[in-house]
Length: 103
Ligand SMILES: [Zn+2]
Image 1 (tube, protein in one colour):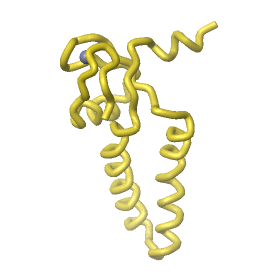
Image 2 (cartoon, rainbow, N blue to C red):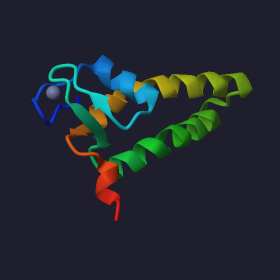
Image 3 (cartoon, rainbow, N blue to C red):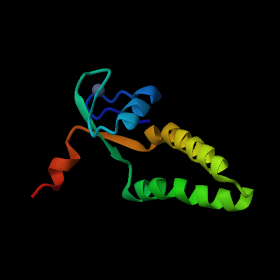
């Protein structure tokens, strides 16, 4: 679960998912109201999580011999699973990660 860097409170799963769905790079802590910037726990983890759904769809399509509709539902199911686990892979920071990369 993402933990607020300012007050140390763990965010509820629902808050994490809500921010994932909105694809915002900042969110207000529900406990201390301080703006937090969700960042992936590690670069490797982000890479794996972005390739895994695509690889799984290809693998399962071949294994289960799915047709177009089957692949469609499989993609939706994987997306829901991905959204469900994504908050567990997030880390919160007090600083905007984008400003760190600026020259
Ligand atoms: Zn907080």
